Image (cartoon, rainbow, N blue to C red; front, top):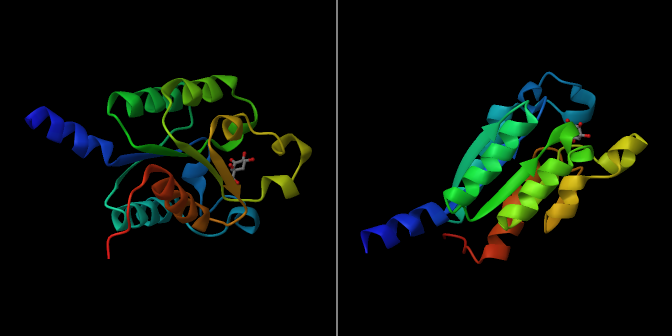
Length: 160
Ligand SMILES: O=C1C[C@@](O)(C(=O)O)C[C@@H](O)[C@@H]1O
């Protein structure tokens, strides 16, 4: 019984994964990514997740392998969902695609900028292919929208 409660508690966690250079949000190309910082993103995610009774476990890494380890950890911890902005790895990483497919956790891809209105090399995303939904171009509000969509997908109800 105690074990079942622990599993339920961890199932109420979503992982919010940010990839390379997203630690520079706020100072990095503000004309493209805005002025909000990664701390702002993580606060927004924590607040939005809490609205659905979920906990946001936010991680950032500039290393592909570490992002893959986070995805594997999400499965070990029985996370209810993943929000991922893999930054430049979105466009290059078959390994991240395979990790998302492999763990079978409902995943939403987010990009701060509208990748389709930018250079051709940003138009394809391996992580989008592995996710059940993808959104881009809403600035950091995309993370809030992604959590709303993920909550609907996993049946997490908004707390009044
Ligand atoms: O690092 C990033 C950020 C990004 O993922 C975004 O959030 O808009 C878009 C990517 O093309 C870029 O490499």
